[in-house]
Image 1 (cartoon, rainbow, N blue to C red):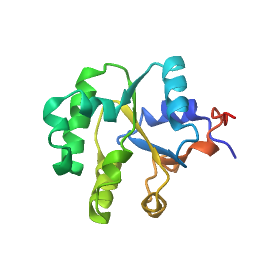
Image 2 (image 1 turned 90 degrees about the horizontal axis):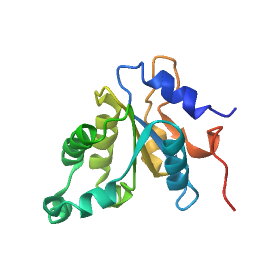
Image 3 (image 1 turned 120 degrees about the vertical axis):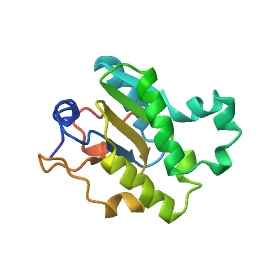
Length: 156
């Protein structure tokens, strides 16, 4: 059964923990999906790689960038973007460099991150995503497969 992503986001806005993850295989439409939905649904789209490259202090310290550093930068992004919904894309360059312990810490941060905004992270499918139970109070998983979203259309 397909999930209506817009309804999911609307419900997620009422939750204590509003963050969630959308994943798919590489190069199959996450970025286009995030950009298209953000244009039609009062969202800010953030390319995290560009965010890092544009900030000299971040760019020069990327080799010592860990989950807590990521969390601090998410807080900064929240203050810059005023929309109720923020889509953060292109964080895989960090995930690729982290250990299993760092990845677990990343998921724990996402799971318990407290924000007034709904923050959606778009990442590549990874094994560690399938081992975490992140449910909202509606018993919906907050780790979503892009291909199960009603609004997603595979581009050919």
